[in-house]
Amino acid sequence: MLMNMKELLKVAKKENFAVPAFNISSYAMFLGVMRAAEKENSPVIIEIHPHELAFTGDSFTAAIRDYLFKSPLPCVLHLDHGASVDDVMRAIQDGFTSVMIDGSSLPFEENIALCRKVCDLAHAVNVSVEGELGTIGVTTSKEAYDAQKIIYTDPEDAKTLVEKSGLDSLAVAIGTSHGLYPKGAVPKLRLDILEKIAEAVDVPLVLHGGSNNPDEEIAGAVVRGINKINISSDIKAAFYDALREKLQNLNLREPNKIEPCGIDAVEKVAAHKIRLFRSNGKASLY
Image 1: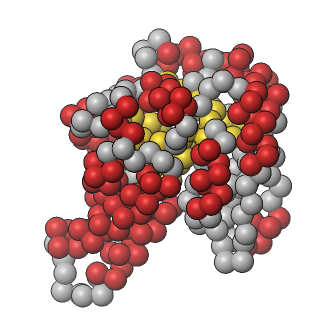
Image 2 (image 1 turned 90 degrees about the horizontal axis):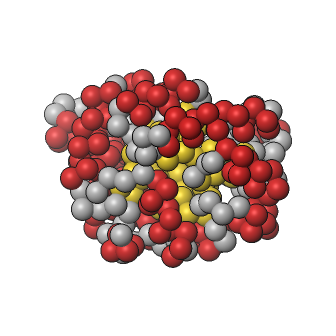
């Protein structure tokens, strides 16, 4: 059951849970995610980044969309971190039901204008729009992590952005980082800021950089108003770690002998995230 994210997250916000949003760039990863969602009876968001889309191609998206359309689960096909109107238009033409336009690096008024433009385009064809305000951290190295300056989302600015742009959901910056944290880095989420943002805005809130954070902090974010959490690095690390171990047998060469272990690894991680986000069993609410 394919729907847009506004429809999906409306239920999550009402029932106070978060829908997992998994970034995938291969069909094997996708199968691992869907097997977990099906077993846990969870709604699910499948995300593809523009860089992933450039790699996989439009026909790959058609295959993903076909599977989601036929699934009994409530599903969304979402463009992650679209950087331009061109990115958004490609996704819409490919049949994505939701898009993100990331203007967080722009001056505030320019971010509003870009989000407004994308909302006007996307809403005309029943596609939902996610925006972002503030900065999500980087984890390329311990030095880069320590040196970065996180710009936390200002609650009043969040309210203004949503009201002036028409966004359906908002990604907020409360201390997470994209990727896996380097050794010695200790993330700390500003749940106090999240509470203030949740009080200021009416739309569902999104947490990017959800991989590798302590479970107790993520659980705390869910009960304080996060309704969508992005997961990419956690499932990809599990997938490729499993494949590396399998490929120690140098005689293996057939994908159907190699990739099942990766699919199983993704399924295990995805199932854990689904339960952590309190999304398990929630497909029955739709």
